[in-house]
Image (cartoon, rainbow, N blue to C red; front, side):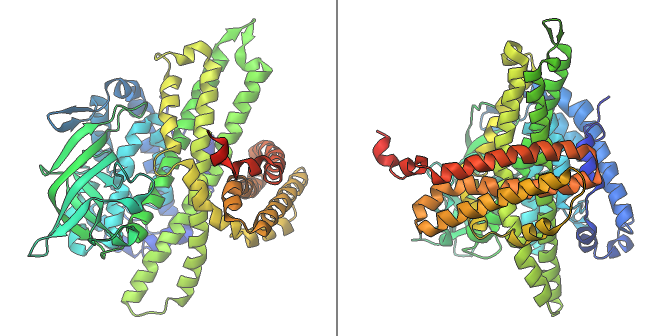
Length: 573
């Protein structure tokens, strides 16, 4: 009986090496919550033991119940009848079981029925569920909507909305996108207006809304009449009642278990979340950062599933008198998949813990401000951590979603013609992976989001520190490789900035962001290799490959190839 937590040595490695002491202490009010809730941890060791038990329960659900239903969910999909959306039977069962396991309010405070878990553990569970059925993550992962209400809503709103999310009675949806406002959310047109009593109502259309049939919707709407940019947008919560018409659900390539809806709001009663005019620039952006990490976890889960399918098939399939995993070219593909998968996981959990620290510091600052205590030291720390989190989040979304497409592509290739058939699970995984580098911001937008931090060398001090360290054995050579990658990056950055040409910087951003990611991941793997000898191979393969790619990136930046892109409008005829 597979357990998708216990059967994954790399996930276990990362769990066992998490450093969440500060995060957990802040989340638990230095463990004072144990006095109010008898199931709250009394110390860090108690908390980690509790997290592990929940991860084991989730792993069992994922491996033995959710994964076996995935094909049926994909075949049946969600359906729309007379304006009502029905989940596939397997999806309904999955949500029911997650609710019974008290997992639907994992990150919400205990006072609202949640478990008060850190973001990092939430992401580990999201990865596990994504491996079992990627479409389920699009329902489970939307409990972030509850966290947005926790952060920015009133206490009355928290009391109204959060307990029903925790029980699974209500699922949520982010209603941001519109027919003419996809990635450019500043162009949102859906109107929010008030009556004479000051109550808000929503009118307009939203499109491509994941889980748009949810009972609770967070809606980005234009509250300031006459405005045309993000400063005129506010965030609202409303119920998916009879005033919200589901006009259609999209007929998609993949993730069939997750209904993607077009919604029409017909003077829908709504509640303002937070302050007017901050809907996009503060609240939606905060929500989208977490959503992008959720998609990255989904991509990581899909990648793990595809690798497992490819490895199993390659061991069983015999050609020319031997298993195809013994054919060097196939073996090399499998090795590349594993290295990509494990290096991505290192990148992901470094970012998840950073987000955790950022959010817990934000909560601490708010509590201390309420008590009129000094927060200058915490604000200084928060500023630095926020810079790093804002850099890592788009890099993670970019790298992991692109990798998921590569890994599933290669997994299908290893299956050969059989992988193209619906009878094999890898075909579904290839379809499910394709959306990950599109929704919650395309890969191109992630490059744009990360480029500012890369151009400012946000991790420069950290890289300086890593370069001064002494590594033992074969890691010394790898450390030299990373130093060379950094010199290539700095030389490329100097070349780009000295041109003082914004268009050229935009063209070169992808290569610079990729080189920066090689450095960050490379040093993460070096640290892991010092802890676990199993990681030495991963570090070696990754860093050697990264050096070759960094040289290629540098050549691309300095070649005439980019000069052609500067004149793309004339070329593309």
